[in-house]
Amino acid sequence: MVGRAKRVGVVPNALDFSPDTHRLEKGRTREFTDLREIGLVPEALDLRAYFGAPA
Image: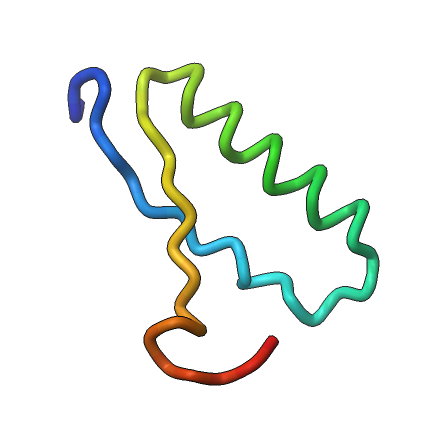
């Protein structure tokens, strides 16, 4: 639908509430891998940089 090599923003801090850093990293890695497998180019978009709130 969107073609190949399209950049997409991923908001990984939606799970910042979890103290399980291993689980968080595993989920983020899986999400980026899944997006790459369908031909997209994922880029992390940290909304804290725009709103100034710490994690």
